[in-house]
Length: 426
Image 1: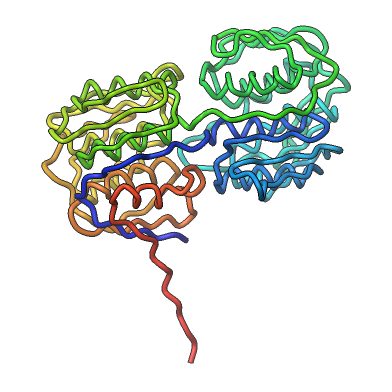
Image 2 (image 1 turned 45 degrees about the horizontal axis):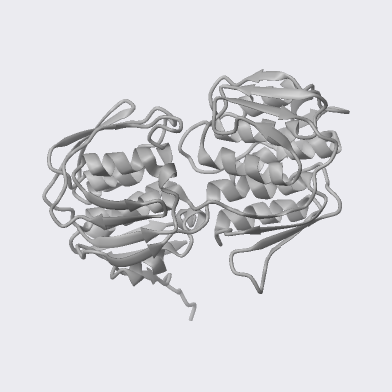
């Protein structure tokens, strides 16, 4: 268990360097299953989720490890692939499930446990399974495992019921080695999809249309090992902007891709926060307060669900009333109850939260329920008066943010890790 102690109400000042994207790194690491030989991937954040996917790769027979000589670099040696993914790892992190596509493409048989992860909604794997079936696989459920079989995957036209990022990635990876052409319709458009496609293209895949609703893949017989660098983490960048803005600080958020943050940037600008923008940085100047805005989460290029909790935290101190509507995950308001413990005025109505801005937040003990909820409570705690004790029992924040505690401390935040009480027996 991790516990953090924050003494807030201190403006942040300085420079914040954005790490590589967790949500891009995870599928790209999974895609190394398709690439025989040694692949080197740079700008990988050092996170618990990354460590989990590395362990999954090792359990599947690959050798994968962080480089000792190159920071934030993971090298994968692929000489053999097993078809069974480990229960204890896949059930720990939902993103592990998309190894089903590359394993099936390489081995013709994949046995993957039903996944776990953050408790923010059902996030069924049905769309992944339909995608594999669309490529000719026979899929059934047996003792908590999804078992997919296909002597050779066949290209096909696959219409996704929802533009699921994970399902788009699973099908795209599997289709790279399928016979013939695959067309994914209603595909997810997120930058992480484009990054995965660019990685696979560099390895020899034939992919067109990534970033649009229709992706076309012409199957090839073999992919080759490559070196590649991951895109910056747009959610970490947005979280840093929220922290700078809510504390009325002055922070230069560096090393991002501005085009990936368009919907996020627009909401902060709409609220009245002053932002100076370049292609790879955002300077936040938020000394004069900010106004309420409404947000509705949508698939990319709409407002990202992964930024909804952090923006909700920011809006607790806005002037006026904001309405936050969540359309992606049905259970992503658990942070709202904890924000109320800090003094926020929030009323929940179904999948919407009505936030009446208050003059101040007050420190209190709060508990983290999931990764982005943890980020939201961290953002709110930085602005709250007095002491906020944040209990992160399952280390959710460390799953998705590289060195975030140290990064905020370097900006002047009064934040520290609290050692657990040690009980002795006399």
